[in-house]
Length: 106
Image (cartoon, rainbow, N blue to C red; front, side, top):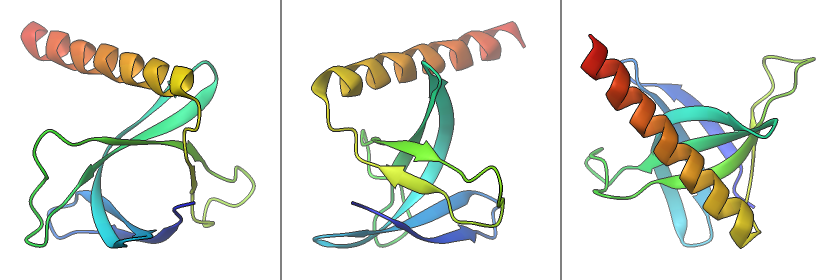
């Protein structure tokens, strides 16, 4: 399982997370954390070596924080079920549609 090793605040105030993966360390920008059916999920945008987002790539993980200790690092979990993964993707698409709608309203 991927663990959050660091929670960094970049100079541009974007939140990033460093993941220790089997094939090496990857830094990702946190796009959003969202709820679906009472569970939290996180959408991460992996960054290349220069800190640029890898085009058309979003990673989804289950996400949880310890409500008793806000200083404890959040925990990520793999989404192991294909049905759960598809539902998360659908919910993320709805979220993007909501963002687009909100931008159109302003």
